[in-house]
Image 1 (cartoon, rainbow, N blue to C red):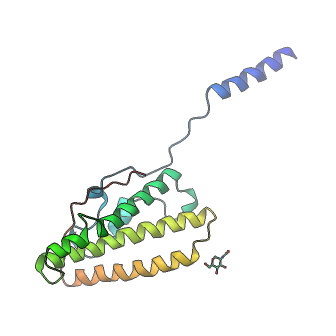
Image 2 (cartoon, rainbow, N blue to C red; image 1 turned 135 degrees about the horizontal axis):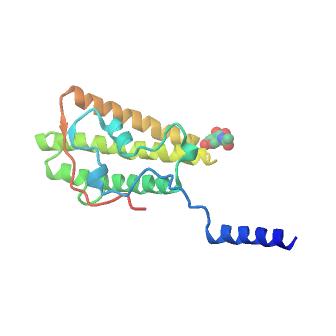
Image 3 (tube, helix red, strand yellow; image 1 turned 90 degrees about the vertical axis):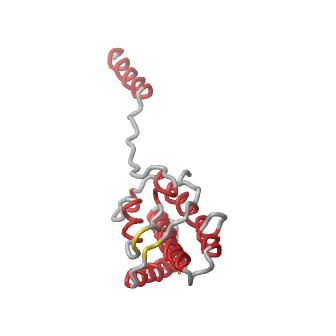
Length: 175
Ligand SMILES: *[C@@H]1O[C@H](CO)[C@@H](O)[C@H](O)[C@H]1NC(C)=O
């Protein structure tokens, strides 16, 4: 009897002393914008490049790690800032004399790819949140429409043979 109780106690004690190691399920790591941006090079591959750079399991959104979700959110915020904030695409396009100059056209192409980055991140975030029980239906549909439009613009730029230019924007996917 005493022996049994002691055994149970020692098992309990050891389970407290050595909690099962928490398996790291996340697949993403924090990166600089320069590493996860998709705006340089030939147009037409933006969506595929986003999915390559953020390889969460899109067949099982419920299983995406909380840390990965936080990284996606931070990356989305930085991608948006890379469009509108100082050092971003809008400023660079203005400085290049608008979207009709050679440099401006390449930057506009990069801006579209950056929109694909921002919107695909947002769509993934909303799908993960939906899998966690949040009703994101309306916002998801809205963002998917915007994404489809920009994927199409990226493909049209590819059909024109455009090579896109990125901006040297300072930011990270650090939550
Ligand atoms: C989710 O929200 C939409 C409107 O945003 C609504 O039409 C729909 O009924 C909601 N679904 C659930 C399951 O609550």
